Image 1 (cartoon, rainbow, N blue to C red):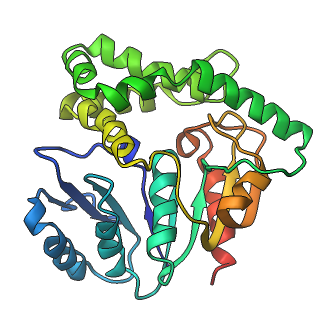
Image 2: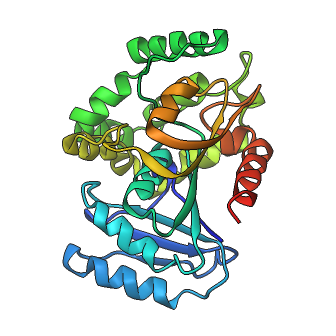
Length: 291
Protein backbone atom coordinates (compact mmCIF):
# COMPACT_ATOMS: atom_id res chain seq x y z
CA UNK A 1 0.00 0.00 0.00
CA UNK A 2 1.32 3.45 -0.87
CA UNK A 3 0.62 6.48 1.27
CA UNK A 4 -0.04 9.88 -0.28
CA UNK A 5 0.51 12.49 2.43
CA UNK A 6 -0.70 15.99 1.67
CA UNK A 7 0.15 18.98 3.83
CA UNK A 8 0.00 21.89 1.45
CA UNK A 9 0.10 24.54 4.15
CA UNK A 10 3.69 23.70 5.06
CA UNK A 11 4.97 22.37 1.74
CA UNK A 12 7.93 24.51 0.70
CA UNK A 13 7.33 24.25 -3.02
CA UNK A 14 9.19 26.69 -5.27
CA UNK A 15 6.85 28.81 -7.35
CA UNK A 16 7.25 30.50 -10.73
CA UNK A 17 3.66 30.65 -11.82
CA UNK A 18 0.20 29.45 -11.03
CA UNK A 19 0.83 25.71 -11.42
CA UNK A 20 3.50 23.59 -9.82
CA UNK A 21 4.05 19.95 -8.99
CA UNK A 22 6.55 18.13 -6.82
CA UNK A 23 6.82 14.35 -6.89
CA UNK A 24 9.29 12.71 -4.53
CA UNK A 25 10.00 9.04 -3.86
CA UNK A 26 10.86 7.86 -0.34
CA UNK A 27 14.61 7.76 0.19
CA UNK A 28 15.29 9.79 -2.91
CA UNK A 29 16.15 13.17 -1.44
CA UNK A 30 18.83 13.52 -4.11
CA UNK A 31 17.07 13.70 -7.41
CA UNK A 32 13.43 14.08 -6.38
CA UNK A 33 11.63 15.27 -9.48
CA UNK A 34 10.52 18.90 -9.48
CA UNK A 35 8.45 20.01 -12.42
CA UNK A 36 7.15 23.44 -13.25
CA UNK A 37 4.62 23.16 -16.02
CA UNK A 38 2.08 25.19 -17.91
CA UNK A 39 -1.63 24.58 -17.49
CA UNK A 40 -1.93 23.11 -21.00
CA UNK A 41 0.84 20.56 -20.31
CA UNK A 42 -0.27 19.81 -16.78
CA UNK A 43 -2.30 16.61 -16.97
CA UNK A 44 -0.15 14.71 -19.48
CA UNK A 45 3.10 15.65 -17.73
CA UNK A 46 1.78 14.42 -14.39
CA UNK A 47 0.64 11.17 -16.04
CA UNK A 48 3.98 10.50 -17.69
CA UNK A 49 6.03 11.47 -14.61
CA UNK A 50 4.18 9.11 -12.31
CA UNK A 51 4.41 6.29 -14.84
CA UNK A 52 8.20 6.59 -14.65
CA UNK A 53 8.33 6.21 -10.87
CA UNK A 54 9.69 2.90 -9.64
CA UNK A 55 7.00 0.67 -8.10
CA UNK A 56 6.98 -0.46 -4.50
CA UNK A 57 8.04 2.80 -2.87
CA UNK A 58 6.38 5.17 -0.47
CA UNK A 59 5.35 8.17 -2.52
CA UNK A 60 4.82 11.73 -1.37
CA UNK A 61 2.68 13.84 -3.65
CA UNK A 62 2.48 17.59 -3.28
CA UNK A 63 0.24 19.31 -5.77
CA UNK A 64 -1.07 22.84 -5.72
CA UNK A 65 -2.98 24.76 -8.32
CA UNK A 66 -6.41 26.32 -8.27
CA UNK A 67 -8.31 23.95 -6.03
CA UNK A 68 -11.38 23.81 -8.25
CA UNK A 69 -9.45 21.42 -10.55
CA UNK A 70 -10.46 18.38 -8.49
CA UNK A 71 -10.23 16.17 -11.58
CA UNK A 72 -6.49 16.83 -11.67
CA UNK A 73 -6.10 15.22 -8.24
CA UNK A 74 -7.87 12.13 -9.56
CA UNK A 75 -5.46 11.97 -12.51
CA UNK A 76 -2.43 12.17 -10.21
CA UNK A 77 -3.45 9.39 -7.87
CA UNK A 78 -4.91 7.02 -10.44
CA UNK A 79 -1.43 6.20 -11.70
CA UNK A 80 -0.39 5.16 -8.18
CA UNK A 81 -3.48 3.15 -7.46
CA UNK A 82 -2.58 -0.32 -8.75
CA UNK A 83 -1.93 -1.61 -5.22
CA UNK A 84 -4.30 0.82 -3.52
CA UNK A 85 -3.23 3.78 -1.43
CA UNK A 86 -4.00 5.52 1.83
CA UNK A 87 -4.14 9.30 2.22
CA UNK A 88 -3.16 11.08 5.43
CA UNK A 89 -3.38 14.74 6.26
CA UNK A 90 -3.71 17.50 8.79
CA UNK A 91 -4.53 21.15 8.18
CA UNK A 92 -4.82 21.61 4.39
CA UNK A 93 -3.85 17.97 4.02
CA UNK A 94 -7.10 17.02 5.72
CA UNK A 95 -9.04 18.91 3.04
CA UNK A 96 -7.09 17.28 0.21
CA UNK A 97 -7.42 13.82 1.74
CA UNK A 98 -11.16 14.39 2.17
CA UNK A 99 -11.56 15.36 -1.48
CA UNK A 100 -9.59 12.30 -2.52
CA UNK A 101 -12.15 10.25 -0.63
CA UNK A 102 -14.88 11.85 -2.73
CA UNK A 103 -13.26 11.79 -6.18
CA UNK A 104 -11.32 8.50 -6.11
CA UNK A 105 -13.11 6.04 -3.78
CA UNK A 106 -12.54 3.13 -6.18
CA UNK A 107 -8.77 3.25 -5.56
CA UNK A 108 -8.42 4.92 -2.18
CA UNK A 109 -8.31 2.37 0.66
CA UNK A 110 -8.96 4.93 3.37
CA UNK A 111 -8.10 8.33 4.81
CA UNK A 112 -6.49 9.25 8.12
CA UNK A 113 -7.00 12.78 9.44
CA UNK A 114 -5.49 14.63 12.36
CA UNK A 115 -7.72 17.65 11.81
CA UNK A 116 -11.30 16.69 11.05
CA UNK A 117 -14.19 18.73 9.68
CA UNK A 118 -17.53 18.17 11.39
CA UNK A 119 -21.17 18.78 10.50
CA UNK A 120 -23.41 19.90 13.39
CA UNK A 121 -25.84 17.23 14.51
CA UNK A 122 -28.32 16.43 17.27
CA UNK A 123 -26.30 13.82 19.14
CA UNK A 124 -25.59 14.09 22.86
CA UNK A 125 -22.23 15.64 23.67
CA UNK A 126 -19.81 14.31 26.24
CA UNK A 127 -18.31 16.68 28.80
CA UNK A 128 -15.00 16.72 26.93
CA UNK A 129 -16.76 17.42 23.63
CA UNK A 130 -18.51 20.38 25.25
CA UNK A 131 -15.11 21.76 26.22
CA UNK A 132 -13.87 21.16 22.67
CA UNK A 133 -16.76 23.13 21.19
CA UNK A 134 -16.26 26.02 23.60
CA UNK A 135 -12.59 26.25 22.67
CA UNK A 136 -13.47 26.02 18.97
CA UNK A 137 -15.86 28.93 19.47
CA UNK A 138 -13.09 30.96 21.08
CA UNK A 139 -10.79 30.21 18.16
CA UNK A 140 -13.41 31.22 15.59
CA UNK A 141 -14.16 34.43 17.47
CA UNK A 142 -10.63 35.57 18.26
CA UNK A 143 -8.06 33.29 16.65
CA UNK A 144 -8.65 33.21 12.93
CA UNK A 145 -8.23 36.78 11.72
CA UNK A 146 -5.39 35.42 9.57
CA UNK A 147 -8.00 33.57 7.49
CA UNK A 148 -9.72 36.83 6.66
CA UNK A 149 -6.70 38.65 5.28
CA UNK A 150 -5.22 35.55 3.62
CA UNK A 151 -8.62 34.85 2.09
CA UNK A 152 -9.27 38.38 0.85
CA UNK A 153 -6.01 40.35 0.53
CA UNK A 154 -3.16 37.82 0.40
CA UNK A 155 -0.93 39.79 -1.94
CA UNK A 156 -0.82 42.86 0.29
CA UNK A 157 0.15 40.68 3.24
CA UNK A 158 2.78 38.87 1.17
CA UNK A 159 4.68 42.07 0.38
CA UNK A 160 5.24 42.75 4.07
CA UNK A 161 6.07 39.17 5.09
CA UNK A 162 8.44 38.61 2.17
CA UNK A 163 10.30 41.86 2.92
CA UNK A 164 10.81 41.47 6.69
CA UNK A 165 12.35 38.47 8.48
CA UNK A 166 10.93 39.80 11.76
CA UNK A 167 7.48 40.15 10.24
CA UNK A 168 7.61 36.66 8.78
CA UNK A 169 8.76 35.19 12.09
CA UNK A 170 6.03 37.00 14.01
CA UNK A 171 3.32 35.84 11.63
CA UNK A 172 4.36 32.19 11.81
CA UNK A 173 5.41 32.01 15.46
CA UNK A 174 2.01 33.32 16.57
CA UNK A 175 0.45 30.18 15.09
CA UNK A 176 3.04 27.84 16.56
CA UNK A 177 2.54 29.41 19.99
CA UNK A 178 -1.27 29.27 19.89
CA UNK A 179 -1.74 25.91 18.19
CA UNK A 180 0.74 23.68 20.01
CA UNK A 181 0.40 21.87 23.33
CA UNK A 182 2.67 23.49 25.92
CA UNK A 183 2.60 25.18 29.34
CA UNK A 184 4.27 28.43 28.37
CA UNK A 185 7.44 27.27 26.61
CA UNK A 186 6.89 26.72 22.89
CA UNK A 187 10.10 24.74 22.61
CA UNK A 188 8.65 22.06 24.90
CA UNK A 189 6.24 21.28 22.04
CA UNK A 190 8.40 21.91 18.97
CA UNK A 191 12.18 22.17 18.96
CA UNK A 192 13.89 25.48 18.34
CA UNK A 193 15.68 23.92 15.37
CA UNK A 194 12.38 22.82 13.80
CA UNK A 195 11.04 26.37 14.15
CA UNK A 196 14.17 27.83 12.55
CA UNK A 197 14.00 25.28 9.74
CA UNK A 198 10.38 26.22 9.08
CA UNK A 199 11.09 29.97 8.99
CA UNK A 200 14.15 29.50 6.82
CA UNK A 201 12.30 27.37 4.28
CA UNK A 202 9.78 30.16 3.72
CA UNK A 203 12.41 32.93 3.69
CA UNK A 204 14.99 31.49 1.31
CA UNK A 205 12.40 30.22 -1.17
CA UNK A 206 10.18 33.29 -1.01
CA UNK A 207 7.06 31.16 -0.76
CA UNK A 208 5.11 32.82 2.04
CA UNK A 209 2.95 34.50 -0.62
CA UNK A 210 1.86 31.23 -2.21
CA UNK A 211 1.20 29.66 1.19
CA UNK A 212 -1.19 32.47 2.12
CA UNK A 213 -2.79 32.73 -1.32
CA UNK A 214 -4.17 29.20 -1.07
CA UNK A 215 -6.84 30.65 1.25
CA UNK A 216 -7.88 33.18 -1.38
CA UNK A 217 -7.98 30.58 -4.16
CA UNK A 218 -10.00 28.09 -2.11
CA UNK A 219 -12.49 30.57 -0.69
CA UNK A 220 -13.27 31.68 -4.25
CA UNK A 221 -14.43 28.14 -5.03
CA UNK A 222 -16.67 27.84 -1.97
CA UNK A 223 -14.79 24.72 -0.84
CA UNK A 224 -12.98 26.10 2.17
CA UNK A 225 -13.14 23.66 5.11
CA UNK A 226 -16.18 21.86 3.75
CA UNK A 227 -17.30 19.16 1.35
CA UNK A 228 -20.65 18.55 -0.27
CA UNK A 229 -21.17 14.80 0.22
CA UNK A 230 -20.42 12.13 2.78
CA UNK A 231 -17.03 10.45 2.43
CA UNK A 232 -17.77 6.73 2.23
CA UNK A 233 -14.22 5.34 2.27
CA UNK A 234 -13.04 4.12 5.70
CA UNK A 235 -11.90 7.09 7.75
CA UNK A 236 -9.79 7.39 10.89
CA UNK A 237 -9.43 10.52 13.00
CA UNK A 238 -6.63 11.21 15.48
CA UNK A 239 -7.82 13.95 17.83
CA UNK A 240 -5.14 15.96 19.64
CA UNK A 241 -6.14 18.18 22.59
CA UNK A 242 -4.57 21.43 21.34
CA UNK A 243 -5.90 21.12 17.77
CA UNK A 244 -7.65 24.29 16.63
CA UNK A 245 -10.82 22.47 15.50
CA UNK A 246 -12.12 19.48 17.44
CA UNK A 247 -15.67 18.64 16.34
CA UNK A 248 -17.61 16.04 18.36
CA UNK A 249 -17.42 12.48 17.15
CA UNK A 250 -21.08 12.49 16.07
CA UNK A 251 -20.40 15.52 13.89
CA UNK A 252 -17.49 13.78 12.18
CA UNK A 253 -19.61 10.66 11.63
CA UNK A 254 -22.15 12.78 9.77
CA UNK A 255 -19.56 13.57 7.07
CA UNK A 256 -17.36 10.48 7.03
CA UNK A 257 -17.50 6.70 7.23
CA UNK A 258 -15.71 6.87 10.57
CA UNK A 259 -14.23 3.52 11.57
CA UNK A 260 -11.54 4.66 14.00
CA UNK A 261 -11.52 7.62 16.38
CA UNK A 262 -8.65 8.16 18.80
CA UNK A 263 -8.39 10.93 21.41
CA UNK A 264 -4.88 11.61 22.66
CA UNK A 265 -3.92 13.33 25.90
CA UNK A 266 -1.17 15.49 24.42
CA UNK A 267 -0.28 17.16 21.14
CA UNK A 268 -1.71 19.90 18.98
CA UNK A 269 -2.15 21.18 15.45
CA UNK A 270 1.36 20.28 14.34
CA UNK A 271 1.06 16.67 15.43
CA UNK A 272 3.74 15.39 13.05
CA UNK A 273 6.24 17.72 14.75
CA UNK A 274 4.91 17.53 18.29
CA UNK A 275 3.99 13.88 18.72
CA UNK A 276 5.24 11.95 15.67
CA UNK A 277 5.22 8.57 17.45
CA UNK A 278 1.56 8.93 18.44
CA UNK A 279 0.53 10.05 14.96
CA UNK A 280 2.50 7.38 13.10
CA UNK A 281 1.37 4.67 15.50
CA UNK A 282 -2.28 5.55 14.95
CA UNK A 283 -1.79 5.70 11.18
CA UNK A 284 -0.12 2.29 11.14
CA UNK A 285 -2.82 0.75 13.33
CA UNK A 286 -5.48 2.07 10.94
CA UNK A 287 -3.58 0.87 7.86
CA UNK A 288 -3.38 -2.67 9.26
CA UNK A 289 -7.18 -2.85 9.37
CA UNK A 290 -7.38 -2.09 5.65
CA UNK A 291 -5.16 -4.91 4.38
